[in-house]
Length: 550
Image 1 (tube, one colour):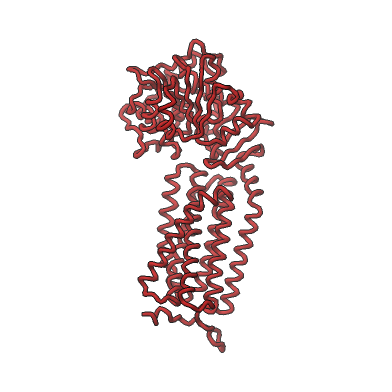
Image 2 (cartoon, rainbow, N blue to C red):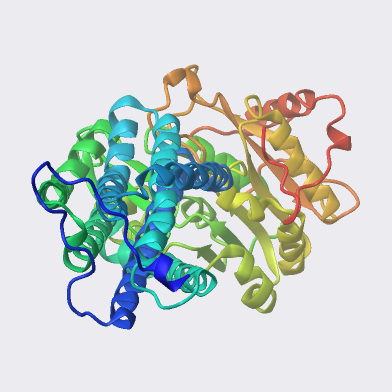
């Protein structure tokens, strides 16, 4: 068996020339060579997982619904790896040159994957097809690695086949662990998504080329050596050029997506934050590509969200989300409000709301008010811990992203509302933004069912916008056409009493730009009439069974 494993197949050589000498270059010791091969396996596995995570992360950012994107990428890649393993059989006669070319192709495809996906989205508005194509290509190339490495390592390994396979897979799995940890904690914070993929591709091509050209160079014909050298050089040049221009590319892509007025673009540890306008034209705030705030009509949303909940005791107000300070602006308009607490997961949004001249002016410089206290925390975790001790609160305002966004689903669950109930004072009110009432009716009434399952009684109401729809809001995706703009925002005002609290304005409510008592009564009636048959039988959404999928 050892003799069979260490005997190399002869490559055909040009007529009249002796075949090239076989065997690895120094170090001649088989154990040292085997360790070097395993080190390359480790590096290649780490790079492969980084490519995979890049596709998942960028797909989730561009299209939302991280569960769907992760499922598509992982399933396609695993399927493609099987195809790659089968195709690698055709390369086993010349494993060294085959592995070298596979690594060159993988480095080029993986290194440029994020760059190409973002370009496709920015200029063509489509990323689903490219994500599937890249998942398939990267999976095929990754699947071809192990069979070829198995053939190479058997030439120098003193172990039996079972031991060799165990070593290869151990190195592969440990490399995947390192790559999986390096991506979120090192590559993404330091380099960003685009540059991280390119650097990973560079490491990939250098590791693969070094293994083949140094350790197994004697297995190659002169023509094969020059081919691999040329391929690796071209790949490195392409990746280096792309990395050198990545900042200019990002600026051009942002202009294509957001327009020419981008003033601030920040990648926080949570999301991408973009501010446009403010100096010339209305201010717009994008969070992960979603138009969260448009100064042209944000008051319609924030007035409807906050003021109906302020009828009754409102000395202590808790705002979950709302780091932009706009909901706090409305709550602080009441003189008898003693404290407003904002709990937002992204401190960078709070920082911009404090320091950006246009955004701080829009929120009425709410963060300068001594009654305001800001907490940087996940709303779910904060309610489970500190929230119970900080309460009770007279009013809880849930100013959160749309429930259809996967990362927000837990903040619309029965468990979340159960935690909110613990922090609510007797007779207190909880108000929830539940998405467009007309366009996402099932999701809206699922929020109502979930509140009821948590012991609340809720009244529905809405806020209407211009005839062509709202400009901004928690679930407006960028590049959406005007026909996609929601015509209304739906809200649920809930309490723990025997009956639901009625959406009404307080006697001491300030003068509002978009809302008065008659308009609120009409919008409450319209929301009640929009309740579909069978809405009362909808099941609640829970952590283990989210139901906001329409």
